[in-house]
Length: 190
Image (tube, rainbow, N blue to C red):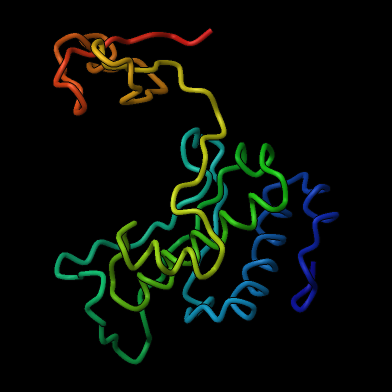
C-alpha cells in the first residue's frame, strides 16, 4: 500500500502478514489524522506487531518522563518529541472487524497526541473528551478469553480477569473486593 492510498475495509480483510498490518494501519492513521485533526507528528511514531499480547489490542510505548503531566504542555528541543512506538496486537487485528480496529487506532492516536503534547498520557478526563471527539472507545474490548475470573463472594460482581496463574489466582480468598470488602472467588470459565 503506497503513501496516499486509502485504507479500505476490503484491504483490511486481506491482511496476512505483520508488514501488511503495519502498512494498512499506517495508511489508516494518516487518514484519521486528517479527518479528525489530530495534532501529531507521525514521523515520530515507530511501529511494531506483537504476537504475545492477549489483553491489549494496541499500545503506545513511550519513554517515561518523570516530571510530565497530562495537561501541562511540554516544550521539546528542535528535534521535537521523543519517538514513541505504536505496538499492534496481531491477535486483536485478526479478531476485530474494520470498524473496531480503526476505532482502536484512533484510541491509540489520542495517546500519541497526549504524549507529544505533554510527555505523558492517561485515560483521564481529557482523554475521554478527546476520544469522544474522534469516535474512539475509552477502553478497547478484550479479544481473548481470560483463563481466570475473580468475583466478589458477597454480590457476585466480577472484579478482575487474569490470563495466567499468579498469586491473586492461587490465593484469591486472601484478597478483598472493592465493592463489598468480601473475599474473592476465582473461577475458570468453561
